Length: 92
Image 1 (spheres, rainbow, N blue to C red):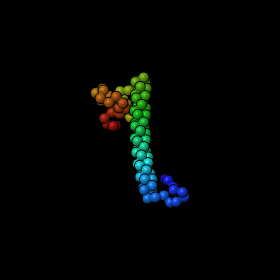
Image 2 (cartoon, helix red, strand yellow):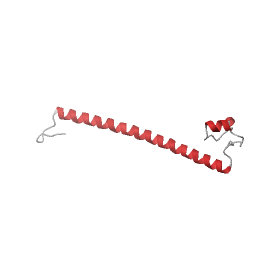
Image 3 (cartoon, one colour):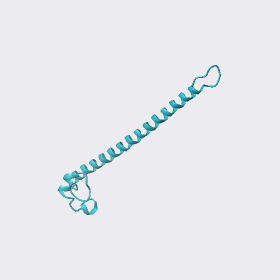
Image 4 (tube, rainbow, N blue to C red):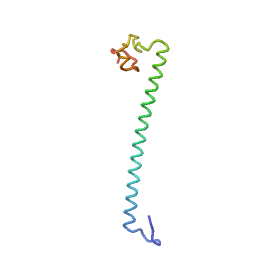
């Protein structure tokens, strides 16, 4: 905002400042939306990493092919299609 010797700013200057403020607010809103999206992606990636690590533990202890609820076989066809499954069809 430009002041002319202590006088009030003119209308053009105020309009320019308002447009700049509106642009800054829109940019901030866009940045916040992008941040929220990035956080959601990071959370999803973290959850998938946790599932992969848990699957590796189940491979090591021999329980990978069994339902975590009833210990019944999950089924090789299901595990081939979705390797991170932890439950049989009855408990999915």
